[in-house]
Image 1 (cartoon, rainbow, N blue to C red):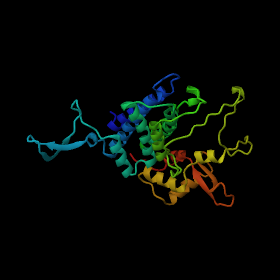
Image 2 (image 1 turned 45 degrees about the horizontal axis):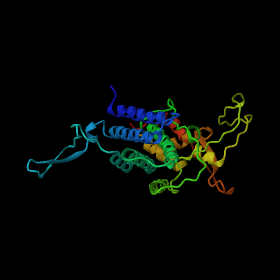
Image 3 (image 1 turned 90 degrees about the vertical axis):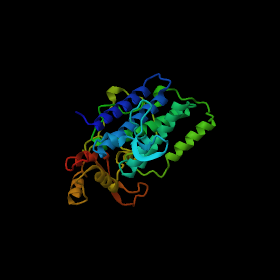
Image 4 (image 1 turned 120 degrees about the vertical axis):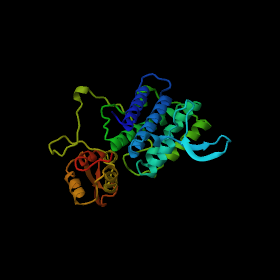
Length: 324
């Protein structure tokens, strides 16, 4: 019999996959709003699944407690479970769970910023409606980042690989024709963009999480039979393909400090000792995990340092015990 946390995890994934499927339909007028609603639901279920794993699957820890009211209307000292309209237990909100998980260092503040952006779109859709095409573009940027964050956290928290699903949003270039006319924003749209910009500040450090992701689609003439598969290799006889510095930074976002922090959060028996350094050095030669580049790419005389791909944790998993 599956635990409650695993049941919630499965439902979180199902809700998120449903959000993607709706968004990627070729003709769906409520695309962005429906995606936001289902994606937020997926995040809340994922947070609740994580909460239960941290509280021994005690379902009562998810219930909201309220002060007992006496017959004369005065407040008593005892607490009771708050009930919904139908009489079922009232569970903690997404905001509450996010705050607690951030305090306990289980999630990054950047993840919560991204979800807050989704919540703004969701709330506008549920309680009124969203104006203009500006929401479509920003939702895709926010949604793409949200899916990336979701996949990373699902793996970190539960060791669940979501490669069986197509976790991507079809670019707007394929689902709508961009207008060439000037766009005049109303006050509501300006407020929305200002709020999103405040969440996606330039001070966000490099790492596996993001608030928004810019999507650039370019059409290049090519015949399928002439297309070449590409993979990173150190074979000197392989065809040379150059990656831009930006592409390298995206592929290898973690420095030593960030990698070490992720290992501390992921494993029960991890410590920064000889074993860790030796294992890490063994992976230097694996270009899927590690890349050496200048610390400051624009300064040729700066020192060289190594950066890591999050996939390196797959190898560390063989040597350390993951937290439940």
